[in-house]
Image (tube, rainbow, N blue to C red; front, side):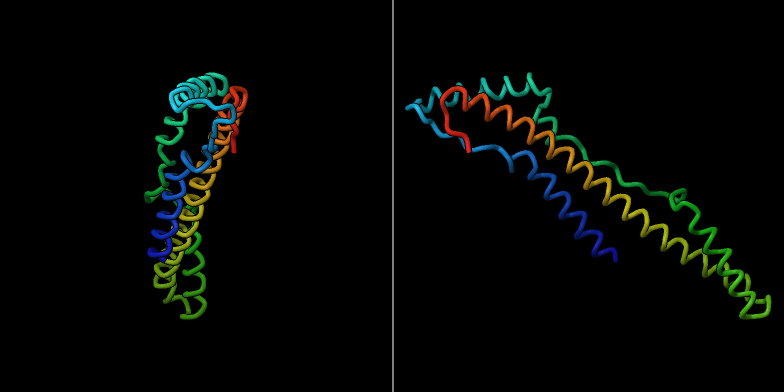
Length: 156
């Protein structure tokens, strides 16, 4: 289980690292612009897109991923419900003497359920952050591409 969580977390982090560069459009001079002119236009369009969208690609790329939830308070009552269920089942099966053992087993089972729920919530938060980053970068690069296109470049 831990191995799967580490693999999933690694995949999310890798995709987050690629967000900033994955969508930058390719720009080709369509009107014979020199490399110097293209570099100047590129810089000016970058600044223009940043000002007009309010999005700074460097800040988006550097934004930290949401901190994973952890700690003993996390769990939404799964441990307590597990203890109650375990005590009830243990009391029924062992004639009342097994209630304590059943409660202990229930606490452990509730803790496992809490960690599983916590992992799901953390993965969902990571995916939501990735979607927001991707949306911001798409908006920025659409503005950048429009600027470069307006200056006579073919944008793909």
